[in-house]
Amino acid sequence: MLVADTYNHALRKVTLRCGTVSTLAGNGEEGYADGVGAAARFNEPWGIAVDAQHTIFVADSENHCLRQVSAGDGAVSTLVGYAEEGFNCPMGLALDTDSHLIVDDFLNHCIRKVTTAERRVTTVAGSAEAHAAFADGAASAARFDGPSAVAVDCNNNILVADRCNNRIRMIAGKGGRVTTVAGSAEKGKVDGTGPSVRFSEPISVILDEWGHLLVLEMNNTGSVRMVEASLAPPERLAPKVQPVKSPLAIPLEDYSKLLENAALADVTFAVGGQRFPAHRCVLAARSPYFRAMFESGKGTHEEGSCAAGQDIVIKDVSAGAFRTLLRFLYAHTLPEEEDCGQGLAVGEMARVADRFQASELYVHCVEQFREGLAVVNVVARVVQAHDSGLAGLEEVAMQYLKANALAFQVIFVRCVYLDTFAVSCRASVGHIPIPCVPMVMRMMMCLAEGCHGDARRAARASRDLAFDHQDLGTGCHCYCIAHCLC
Image 1 (cartoon, rainbow, N blue to C red):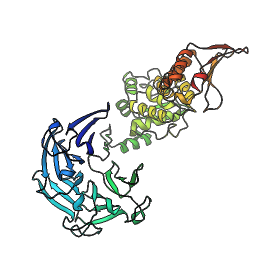
Image 2 (image 1 turned 90 degrees about the horizontal axis):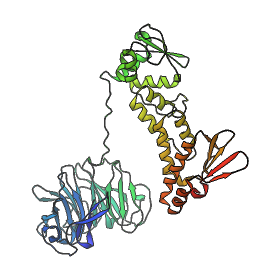
Image 3 (image 1 turned 45 degrees about the vertical axis):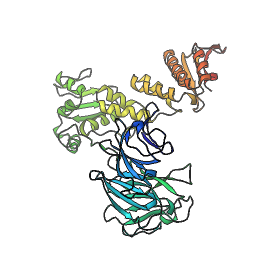
Image 4 (image 1 turned 60 degrees about the vertical axis):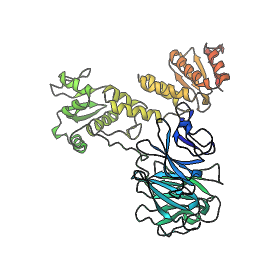
């Protein structure tokens, strides 16, 4: 991240990963000098823009010029300005879709364009010959009062923070006509639409990746305003939507129709009391499990023979889960709900996807499981995942426990008569049986590790992992970590 350190007269670089700050150019002394790194001089640098070649452009406001800086060695040169181009305190910078620089010329009350290759400067809207004023209209007739920031969308519409007019203005990409998006001459802080909105000296505008215009104001500190103006974000910010690549060469709709029509089916599965006609070639192409089954000539670990034309009996799978599996294998349809709209138990579809080696479906189910976790259900889900033999889901739930450890006030109790454990937390109701000591130990470890952000709790958690044992005298023994987590 680059920062124009205005009153230190320098261009700074922040490495976000580790928080390291370094100076790319300038040395804290105001002045005007081209040069490399600390040998260069700025006088209140303000706006920054970076092009596709990583060249950095800086609005050197009090030197009344635009500078360009090499990202590699911090070499600074003057692009345009320093008297001959007639800038008067340039402040905001942005690049349009043709990589031309758009500049707000603050004290000339106009918006300029710089063709960087030719170093040619033209006026886009407003007039340096006119006094500060307010007027919408054609580019040359429009008037600004201290424009201090600009942003450009992917249609080359220019958004302007017209500071002293307390308005957000727009210069149309086609024709250059100037209109007011929001605000009026009256200062204030009022949300709304059009002229009912009140700003107090907007000084910065930026487009986010969804086309929202974010506004900072000089006198309304502590807040960021958002303007909805049906803008298209710059291409570099627009969300990258990757087209979904079908794993099938034939359109998926055709496979879906094949599943609905049993006329050409060459295999039938008996699952959960229902019969499912299917097509060997589709299943073999989509699932290594089915491919191995059909290549062997019979249903591996299943009853019935493919070769003999008998139904293949699939045990320990519900009809709803198998129906969802077939929809995925035929039409690549991923269930929108965790129970797949079939009333399936938590983790059931993940177990089936794992068994039949439908890897993308399994990953999708794991993500749904993760999104469904909450303090009130995570312990139950740990148990369910453990009972289903789904180590992946169990691990996801354990990590949730660790991440949310401070939300729990937990007591584990072992009942000698029932040989079970129970857990309760302040956000849930009742007790949930936990079948084995290793799982209890794992939960305690996750909760203790999750408390390490709190030194007091972490110390107590580590000590109590030795299982503070209390005989309750009623056939129960209490292993308690409540006092270190509450």
